[in-house]
Structure formats: C-alpha cells, structure tokens
Image (tube, each protein chain N blue to C red):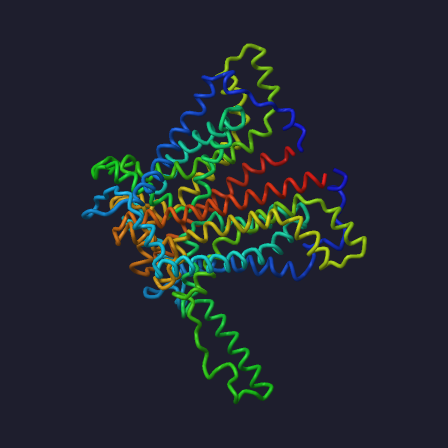
Length: 282
Length: 317
C-alpha cells in the first residue's frame, strides 16, 4: 500500500521520457489516422474515387446510405442479430460464470478449457465448421421465414462465439462477491432460488451489463463467422459493406461506416460508464 | 494472494446437485452442440472425398492431408507464418514503449491513455481494414505523405547544390502497398496492435517496482536495468502478447483478402476458397484443422511457459 502511494521516483518514470511519449503519439496517429480520413471523406462531394481528391463538403452520401434499402435491411438485420444473440449470450455466460465460480466438480479444468476455446481458436475455423454443420444437418433456414427467425443460423453462431467472452467478464465480477451474504440469507431461510435472485443477481448486474455490451459489439463487428453462416437472403451490415467494397467503390460505404463507428463509440462509452462503477471498489 | 479469495471455499457439486445441473447444463449443451459437433464434422470431412457437387463420402482417406505437402500449400503456410511473425514482432516492439508510457503515467491519465489504445479495438474490423485500404492506395494518403516528404527532400538537396544528381529519383514514384506483402503486414500490425499492448501493460502494472529501484541504486544504467530487470520481469506479458497477436494474425482472412488483393494469400483465404468457390470441403476441412492444431500447439507452449514462470516465481519467494 505504502509503495503505491509514493510517487514513482524519477529514473523509471517512463511516461515522462520524450522518446517513449513520441512512440505513444505516433502509435496513436497510426491507429486513428485511417479512421479519421474515412470519416472526413464520407463528406466528400465526389462520385468516382471518393477517397482520392477532396471536392467539397456534402452530406448527400448519408442520405443515399439511408435510402439504400439493401443497406438499411442489412443494418436492421445486424441490430436484430446483435440484440437477440446478446440476450442469450449473457444468460449462458452468466450460468457458465456461476458454475465456474461456485462449484467444485470433476474435470472442471476441462470444462474451463472448453469454454475458453471459442475465444482462442481462429475465427475462420469456427465459421467453416458452423457452415458445414448447418448444411450437413440440412439446417437451412426456409426462405420465407418471418423476420428475426430467418436469421436463426447467424444468431446461433454469434451466441456461440460471444457467450464465453460474456462469461469471462461476469466471472471477474463474481470474484468480488462476499459469500457471507449468501450464507446469511440462507440462515434466514431463503431458498436457493431466492438467494440467486435477490443476492447474487443484483451483485452480478454490472458484470452482466459489461458482458452484454461486449457481446453486442462482438456481434455487430463480426464478419468472418457471419460470412460463412449467412445465406443470400440474410445479409448483415458487415457482409453488405464487404460486398460493396469488393464490387464497387461507392462513397456511401464511407458514410455507412461512419454511422457504425458512431454506434460503436456510443456502446464503448456506455461500457466505460459501467466499468467505472465497478472499479472504485478496490 | 488476495485474502478474500483464499477464504472462499467452493461448494462441491454433489452438495446441491440440482442447482449445479441447472447452471451447468445449458452452456454445456450449447457448447457441445454448436461448437464441438461442428468441429467434429469438419474433422470427419477432412478424411472424406467429394462426390458430386455437395456430397461428401467418408472414406478415411489421408489424401487431403497429403495435399498439405504440395509445394503450393507449403509456400502458402510459409508466407502466412513469416507475415505473422514479422507483424507480431513489430507489434511487440511498438507496443512495449506504449505500454510503458501507460503503466507509468499518472493515475489520473491512465484510463484515458488506455482508452486511446482500446477504442480502435472496439471498432469494426471490416471498417478499419477498409479505412486502411484508402490510406494505402497508390493515390492514397500514405503516398501523399511520401510524395510530400520526397518533394521536401528533393528541395533540400537542391538547396545544398545536389539538385542535378536527382538522388531521390527524377520523379516521385508512388509505393505500391496493396497486393504486396508489406501492405498486408501494415494491416496486420494496424489491426492487432491493441491486442499486444494490453497484456504487456498488465504485466508492467503488476511488477514490483522496487526491483528497478534496487537495480538503479546499485549503479546499473537505465539500459541495463531495462534489459536485465524490466524485460525479464515482464516476459510473461510479452509471451501472452505474442501468442494472442500471432494466433489471430495467422488465421486472418479479411486483411489479406482486402489489402492483399488476391496476390498475398494467407491460409484463411485458401480455406475460404475451398468452401465458397472451390467447393472442395474435405481439403478445406484439412486446412482448417491444420490451422487449429498450430493454434493448440502455440497455446500449449504458452501455458507451459507460464507455468514454468510461475514455479520460478514461487521458488524465488
């Protein structure tokens, strides 16, 4: 404790070294410059090669993006997939987190490894295996399925890769739970379910929210796994943008991308807010 | 380490078996059904043969694995590996000083500096790759910058009387990044840099600074302290950073696809082709499994290393 309070002495105060600061600065420029250029050029008034020469300010490509039905449909699909898969991923993640945190059981390390596997294996392997799985079991979603149901395959895929992440976040939160509270409640006659609902769940809440926001952005971001599990009629936003990038360069992509960046910023901001609720308790 | 953890005793699953089952079953079943069964299927397919357009017959043939030894595929692996190795190395070298700055910044600044690094990581991968596509074109921003530097250099040479020699070339020649390995490497570093910063930052944040103090007090130079104290103490973070950047790089699809323009294929691009246009699922499965095995080996090595490190630390006290 005492060590932490003391200001670190001069010699290894790396953050004050100019050369290191310069690396940080240049690194940040490297990370942000492409995105900033993209946002700026989304306002470029040029039809062909919208990313080369600046031809004046316009917002018409935003209007175009909003009136592009295929793009909007893809966008709505993406949001629907993100909402539904987040909901289920958080439930599965919470269950996983509680199991790992609360119980001793045989082969526990194996289960732990199983849960973390979707986090570490290359996305392409998971995408390919799910594509094969759906098609070899004949699990094609019928063409005329009503709206969210036609996305079932993609939603299943998204839940599978995002719930282990949610579990990780929620488990971290559970580590700060005071078990005595649970014991006290039980001594006072609460049932197993009541303890879960009234004691454990409220404590988990910030973790659940953080896990949900993580699952939501992961779902909204995913390209590779969706690429393999989506059909010709179930296009998500990244898939649509990809085909636009591949087949025609339109300035609309810049506008659409900027909108998605804004959404991501918003979600990140929310996540930070919830994270900062958690941190001061150290 | 933390006292409240030591005091917590986990419950045996037998004590409250129904509650255990209620929590355990749904994620377990989901994982088996939608993760392990699909992997099992491609494992089976990798021993199969294509029959007709979509039919695959399981013949336990090793033909698909033999094809991994074809020179074309070996050069593909080799390319994927060296692109990822160089990009990982660049990521580590760049992210170490970045992590040092964050770890030693004033507490007030830390979350903001971290945010600067993490924010791109939350941004859509496709959009970031697409954004880079605009930068790296022959008429893109990076070449603008290089052109400007060239002009400045040329003018400077003229000023000192060397203008007639055209040391920097007659005209500015734009550098081709897209469709070249260097473009793909820039993309890989760009996308995975935040992955490398975080574990290194975490290890620097955790380490006991009194070792550094002792080293400096005893007269070691800054550089020696860095090399002999700081670097070994943070080697756990460096290892984690290496593994978690290298694995996704090796399997990356979008970056070589968009920035490599079909000229700089990596493993994932060839896998994709087997499933989408090539229609050779058994071979695609064998390739995917090969990639998976490499991942497992790397993870095993990393956890082995982490274990040894922990033991050494325990031995040290």
